[in-house]
Length: 363
Image 1 (cartoon, rainbow, N blue to C red):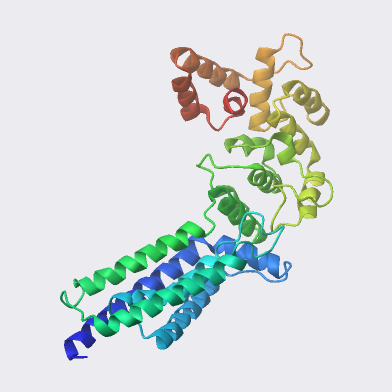
Image 2 (image 1 turned 180 degrees about the horizontal axis):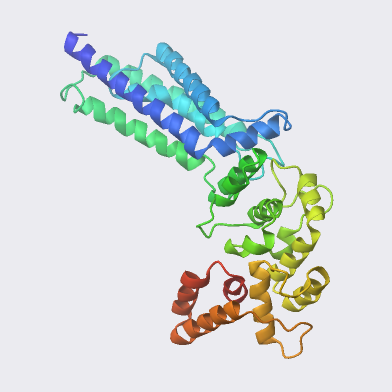
């Protein structure tokens, strides 16, 4: 191998190493930290906790050492050098692929047969390229802009897409785990900020948000600023352990239940609102809150009472709030101005998405 060839292959190896290290670290740190935290929590039965910085660094270094071992065994050069990173990226895919029910069934699943099969196929591909390297000379220039470089970079990119495609990329599940991780660190504000500006939600996310808001004493004030899914069944934790989809992964179920018992009145009232049972809400509200000028009701309760007063001629309470009346009148005006159903919903969403009214009328 002449000096030009040695230099060209050295540049390719360096470039492959750099893109691998950068991709692996940032993928672990920014995109898959919550999946790894969940897996470690489940496998250690909650005795240890995952640190995203330490975990990303250690896993990246271990996978790079694995690549070095593969290269030492295969001696793949030229256009196939990038393939020495395939086993490391396969392991990365495996580590970040636990499914949404891993906390209920921590099994290998399809990896039991797919993993060995992929390894056998990889060995066959390596053998083929080793034979080709012995009989095909390289051409096409040297350095960063050579054909040798871009063939290897293309292989690396394809393998990166493989990792992304077969890892767990369920957005709602990632939000759920991120919220739980922040709650474990008692970061209530951080947990409530996760996914707030998106429409992504499910029963588990709703329950965790209700838990965080209840701990802050803001359940009736802010719950319906989020996309509430599942009604009261999602908000109120059931008694005992549960294997339902709304079960907590890392927050003990009994802790969710304890918070419910500490703030039962607001959980009950928000449960009625989530089920759109405003009559039952009004009947329960007067048991828990005296309706007089000295008591400041949470925002969603004021909104619900305004709706209730307007919709019911026979009512258990007659609530009047000039600010709420004006805002609700503006909503009705907006509806009248938009005759198209979709345009009407979009207009109300843009102006009233953080109100109980939008939830009651459009969700």
